Length: 76
Image (tube, rainbow, N blue to C red; front, top):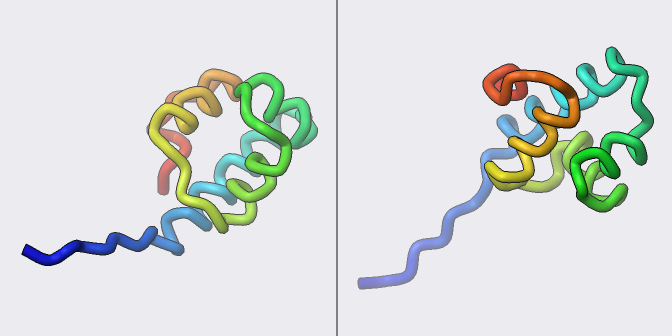
């Protein structure tokens, strides 16, 4: 059996990042504040919002909690 290489879904990552940014702005949080509340680095928070990284489910859960949102609202 050969190795499989799985890429990330660029459209999903972009839409996820856009939603996180929208909710963050609605809460009047800076990127740094949301990163602190979700216990992630500010540079990772920036990459998520720009849709250039494929985040984990546990990070999505922490972001949802920090935003006081249901995790399902972070996905398109």
